[in-house]
Image (cartoon, rainbow, N blue to C red; front, side, top):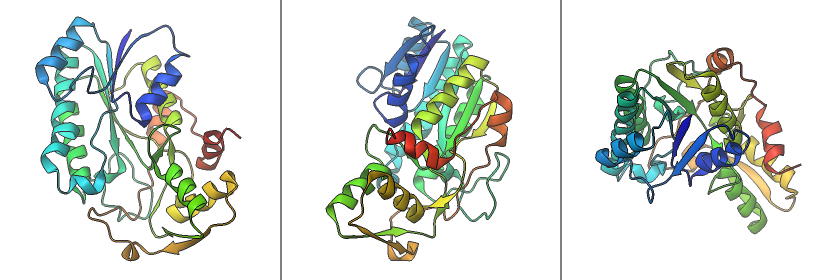
Length: 281
């Protein structure tokens, strides 16, 4: 199988690259914008056809949630239009596509975990463009799977975990939001789930994936500092109202993962176990 991974320099793309060494039976094309501009439909079609691509994993996205509010056109181009190009190119080849999406397709007003069948209701430009991308992919490729994830972090790139480690070492006190609830996702676990889907064969549909368990950003930060050995920084809980952002954040974005676990026989670690793995402990 020939597998195209877009957005290969991001958190998830890099984790896919690391794990690909365990799946040497496949041929990989790891691309970022330098190798393949996914916003160029002709370039996408040519690349997929010339390299006989069998599976596309789209890890590319415009993920600057607040900046997206002022960059609607670019956000839509990367999160909606480009995935549509990839889906159409896959369809022409009879290939599969796995589109990575987000919990931001929901407004976060639930109080029980979101299933894939819940009505979507994005409250930000980022969420709106990612939802449009899901719909574009599902409409234009028969062998399409969408995986919604949340609170992604990795040893690669910039993310919440690395920021909290840095700030914890720089500051005596730190305020972190306690009234937004969700589940962290270690990008390596998500990459492993994607490989499980590729190995079993893409089953069309929308799926949810994050680590198991539930916490607030405050709880998450306390766990990060504990594992990083940071004891000199006092972490204080903040209300969302105390920390205004341009884009609305979901207050509750816990995802129900029953469907992906049962369809692809995947076991998902608890978020604290995966955080330990991140630290290599």
